[in-house]
Length: 385
Image (tube, rainbow, N blue to C red; front, side):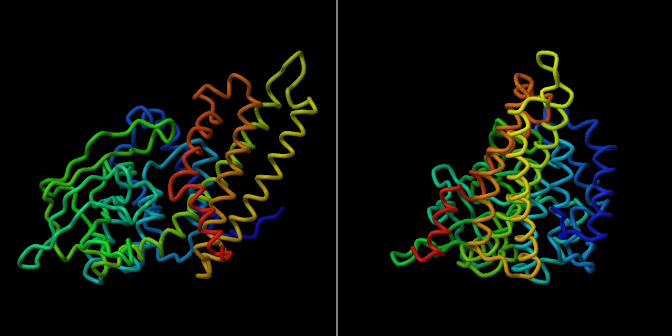
């Protein structure tokens, strides 16, 4: 089906990203996977190209674009090429909405120019050992000093994407105890400078996929954070998270869409080239039927994502809409990629083939940003159940 979600500007941006990947990313991507992340200068290069700050307002050195569709283009091109931009997605897709919506003018002046240039890379730390999707159970504390000038942060975070290289981390912490009426009360977001005394990057977590994206454990021991680095109002952290999780889940959905489309493309190319019993694998009826099923699911995924992208740009994407998109797209992508890997036979299990990396990378999409089970809970609540 013909797509109408992208215009000429998006396609020009697509060519820029595609050419950049071919020249500067694909030849060295394996080295990034071995290292566990791209070199720090890579993010400055993304800044130079305007990729990091395309949605940052022009007065802060960004592109001033309103549409998230440019970010979807990056997801499609990286998936098609079988590469990753490391923690780019967290930085540009997850963090920026918090800064645009809740940062003060003074904070924007301090942070957004570096955000757009890649001089300041951001991460967000929500998950803690033992909390998982239950953000109301966060136990990292931030106590206000006697003179009211700073907070003192103590606690630990885990599964933090980009945590190893980040310059600033949005830390969700408890500035006041929860109340019996509201377990989510008392949460705030502090923007922690990673050069602060008492902050430490712990174990870099080994994962089955996303090898070029660093994931780390973080610890905070009496870390002083100026009150001027609190994001928004004290105690409003949970409402801020709820507001911005919709975009995070849309980001995961369009990433899953991109991955499923890439898997289908790789499988078609492989079965046309590979011969079994003297005939191309593509000539067998089972191959044709499986790929027909996959193509149909990819189209359905894409239609849902494109609709969600339009709703988001119009400011009409609800929390339930985003949950539906994430649930359907990630579950369907998992099915598609599994079938496409099967058609590769034993070669599908070898990491030098893109399908193997897509298989490993996509599995986590049903977990992070809220598990599929959490998405079902959100959708059921929207149904009045």
